[in-house]
Image (cartoon, rainbow, N blue to C red; front, side, top):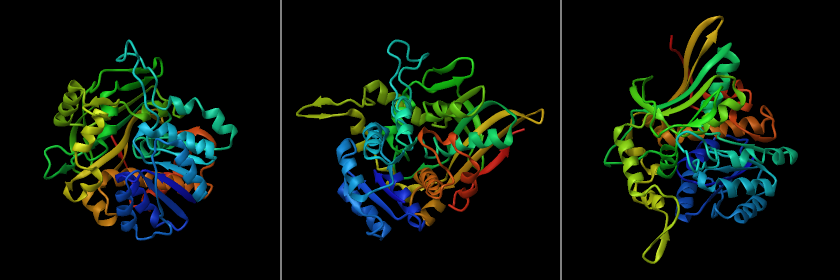
Length: 402
């Protein structure tokens, strides 16, 4: 398989590191806007032939198409912030290869009632083009990271193997990670975090369809495994809520994130000051997006690994009925930062995200998963994926809740 990897931030680097050990990966073209970052990641991989570098502006569709043609790639892997999804997605279609991302095209709030009704939903742009992709015989694989991605596969696994009837699917994410030496240092892209946390969260119910709520709504205490403990989780806009109901029969779907009071207060302050704005404004003689300024002021998550301590947990809580009896389970994966740094040289959050697309590449390359059109992770047989997780160093577990 030959892949054009667009974006070599923390997750992009981790994808390349994990892919390096797989002999069926013929080439991964590292492409990014930042030449110094390209050199840094390529030097870490120590394999210039399999991991060549190319500078790219991810907002320029024609540049992406030109690189795909130059290297004759089979798949374009989008590892950029989702603001770049449209040109990368369209480039793969025009060039004529498969596409994969870890977050879908962006939403737009309802113009008059944003906290009750959906406007443009996450992924709408992509799903509206599903028929064209299918007719062309190409696959656009959406949301194949950890959340979305692994969490969605867990939902499909629960439907196929653990339940006769599902009442609710709730993705729950929490951690006890700390970054020492910084007063505030997010361990994932702050651009993406602002987007998903400050937008109106989406909930799906069988009788109502998709609807929105206030940011940080429905707080609940969820107890995470392996020493992480009890964490308050709140509603956040996330792709799973838009994906799971398309393929998993259930009555309700939610996504809740353990953010913590400090993080929520920082996000609220950014919103109050207008620093969450992703549109460019005039500042003296330059135009700049306030959100990009915030991101530039904070440490790069890709370089925080040696200052991070603790674990992060991603998982899917499912409630329903099995053999006539009520059942609740939590399917989860826990990544320990110390272990990820020791084995991969990448911090836990990006490593936990990155192993999932590589397993998906593996299953596509070897014909285990076959499909065309615009699809999410739930559209595929989940068992081959979960069976490979341990071999890739990220085993999953199931905890019975009752």
